[in-house]
Length: 152
Image 1 (cartoon, rainbow, N blue to C red):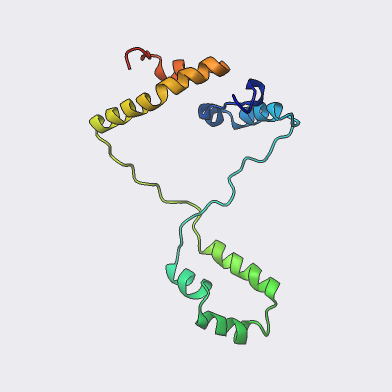
Image 2 (spheres, rainbow, N blue to C red; image 1 turned 60 degrees about the vertical axis):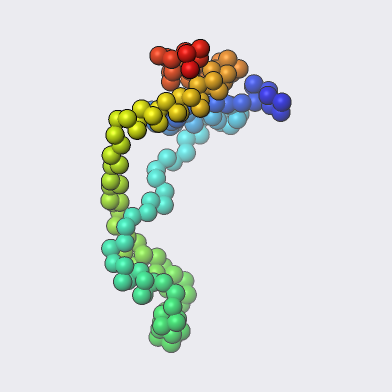
């Protein structure tokens, strides 16, 4: 508050982003005085998949002295640079699967989970209450409704 007034702060809830990304963007645009009727494309970009062939990736597509010789002596004479780049990008695309393998769930026992929750509560309880008081947010009651500051 030393540098910014309350009117210059926008506190957003990640849950709102999950529920309605467009709604949260409109709220952000309003706050920033940007045309809130603008709707950006929210489609995922640059999604990394998994390699289908590590050999292809490591031996053919990665820079190496052998690859450089092949490009300089066999490919350069008949394939212009811009066409070569298009071909390389297409090979990368074809060598990458669209679906990522699911990340394995990490098993956490209940005792560890409760200790972690208690530690996080300890770290954020007072700050959350102060944020609510200062800016009129409702995170304290949302996250710590069953706790009180006095018994922490």
